[in-house]
Image 1 (spheres, rainbow, N blue to C red):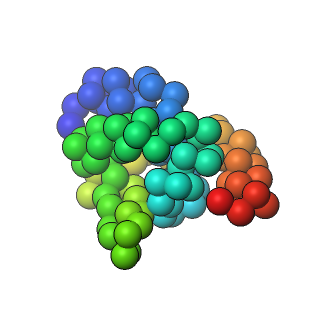
Image 2: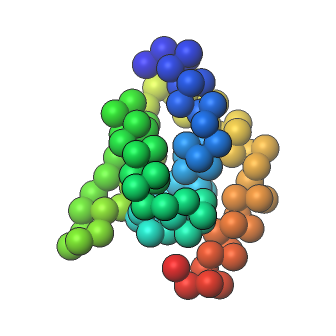
Length: 105
């Protein structure tokens, strides 16, 4: 992956939000991501497919659910950029997760 590819992926607010949520939560399923982003399942799935194709996220199946997490195999420079972005938005991301937990998604 080249830096320009990462920046193009993260230029979309929904994809950046997904990445930051996964950075904070560790692992989330599509229903969680739909609730947290207030986006439809097809839209989230399309964004996830782009992130998965770029090898930024991995998935694992548990029954009918698919859970997503950041890939530990992404380049260190990409992980550093994600960490820096997460640090600047950490409180907002945590608040979103806290509110979603209160709703019970």
